[in-house]
Image (cartoon, rainbow, N blue to C red; front, side):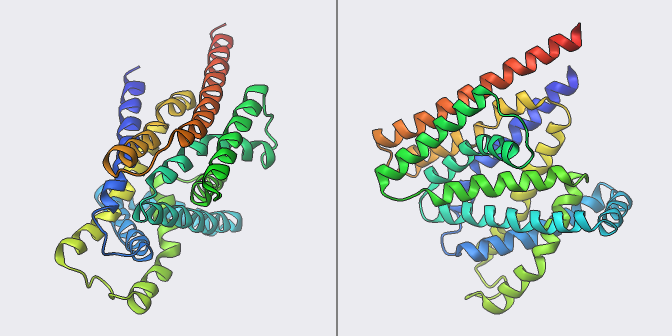
Length: 299
């Protein structure tokens, strides 16, 4: 019980930090989205290197790296994961910088249901009746948003699907979270550095001191929630994760409406309502399944 309580606290901390991250990107209005992404990659890699040294995990890290290099499928998986998470990060940063935090929050609301969909289509997992209803409700919400705005919510869909595919890649590669994140940022690091040195309008770290410090901090705000979540996932069940993961998009949506004053009409609320209802059906179904499994184990 003590470990579970610790896991819940760590999980809450991770999702709350993810929820308030839009505030951080809003502090960088003079830096374009591609620059922020590249600095995020560079400083995340450096931060992870420092983290591995401080926690004295260098030997374990090198052993895992050797294991990855000996397995071609793992190498391909790491590269694919690096590309997917970069797409996800860029879409999120771009959405926030364009004043579309509501759309970004929608992507994270949709993510669990997209996981169910991909699990059914790719992993051939059986989709129960509640899962079908949940996915149909979410699809209805997306269609309503598309009809109301006249534009498909591409950013939301890209964020949801890129993170879900990223999760699939991570599921197939059995390595620690810190090794995974370090290798993923290392894969994209050369591209990020080439862009920053040769294609960025400003050049590498050529902003004012306060902006440069914030860009350096991008690595910290990226890595810490991921590490907290990884530790939480070891201690708590999937069903608990399912409940607390909606803290992130809920905080983002509240910021979008009340702090950033983004337009939020009754029509949008109705569309989101279908997605929330789908989430409720999916979460309740998962809870019942979890309770049933616990009862069987108890017997």
